Amino acid sequence: MKIAEGFLLRKVANQSVVMPMGKKAFDFNRAITLNETAAFLWSILEKEDATKEQLIEKLRAEYDVDEATAENDIDKFLNKLRENGLLNE
Image (cartoon, rainbow, N blue to C red; front, side, top):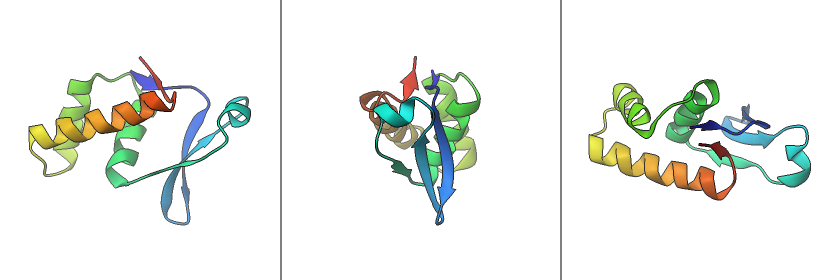
């Protein structure tokens, strides 16, 4: 899975914000603010096609978190991306 085309992560006033670009700006008329962990996961999915298992591994390597917590947080994050049409699977 990977972030859908037409969306970029930007820093605005020390906040990580997902912004629609090009044609997406007409269809997606809002911005989404991400916390530090979500911005970390977004940056991975923006650059490469990654599986849930790869995201868990990378999250655990970056943060001191157990596997169950990492999986739960990633599930919530991926579901939000799906709900908003931000994820290509």
